[in-house]
Image (cartoon, rainbow, N blue to C red; front, side, top):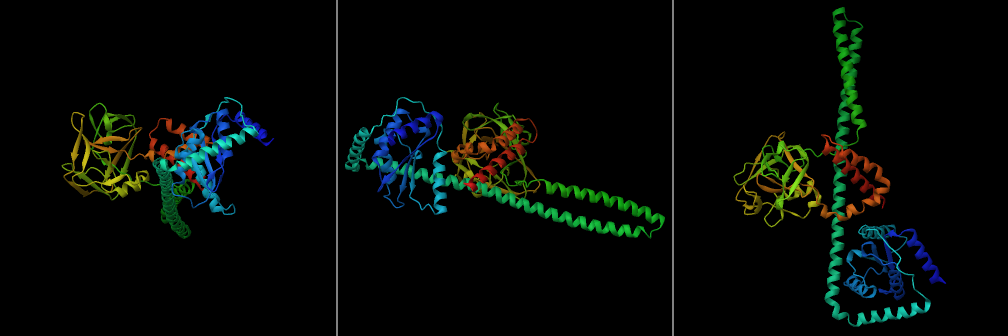
Length: 483
């Protein structure tokens, strides 16, 4: 009777939600998966052919201490039993936890979320009824048991495959950890910068408030003098009082503006850039000074690809040094990333590059003498530029510097060197964009309004894009803090 009830419930679930993610949980005894769970899975898979893109296999209630190759062994055995290719990101191994321990529950929930966001919902169409009778279950359990015994007997022959599966699983876990850490670094950096800006706004508000109090005291003193002043003095005092009232009104306007505006993250002077006059190679083979680049211009990137400019980032040097290579006078800041001939990233100060864009963590090397950089000759052919000399100079803090930001590819040529536009390295955050759909229900209206704003032509495209980025980061931060 229980089997028939389960079959009806499964049919009902697939009918109600054909386009779904499927999470199948395998129980275990002493680390060994239960035969009946494998039998049930195969029966469901025959009735509703499961797509590996939307399928997550969960092995539940495991002891925290287990053999070092346990995950690799289970994944290989699962492939034999369920006849599906099992990738590490499609299996989630959950430890047994103390249900009363909130931290353990939170960690388990986060582990499940990390696995779920890798899935893509697909439609599951019924191919046949679920065939699972009591007598058949016992027979199929024996078949699974025999397959498991055979696997155990021949396990020594599978050691290489087990180790390979385990290696891929361990690498996935490490990458997910690094990705989460990097994402949190971005959020923390945004929060720190917002806090610094908030303090700066508070300091400015206090300064204006003190100035207002001084003005009011002077205004009161002038008012008292007016009572005993001569006619000529009275005219002068009236003019002074009128000027004082205007100044107080302007101060009050500034105070109200500071109090009403949300804190803005200040990035002035922190971004990697090039000085005016730096020549950018365009897609048509001509060169254009970076300060004359406009939104919509098409530049030449690595591998002879063309990329469209989405905005020109304009900053101030703000106390930083400028650097040059070989015969080129200093033209770039220490954070800017150059590409070497073997495709790696280099900059004068890798840590500054990572501070500007955390998604580059661990990817940027120090630019050194004898490095070979990707370049472009006058015939638009790739060339190699050997670094024979690096030079550095101080410059006026108010010097204007520029960076080109592109719609794709994110490489361009500056003074003949192949450089990076410092756009976030999205390859570091594949899951970040996959789990945005989890935020969509609560954020769709706001995100749509930001997108509508961005696609409306205007001169403040960078500000609009940053507003969208700020909103999404705040939404992610809020989601992580609640989950």
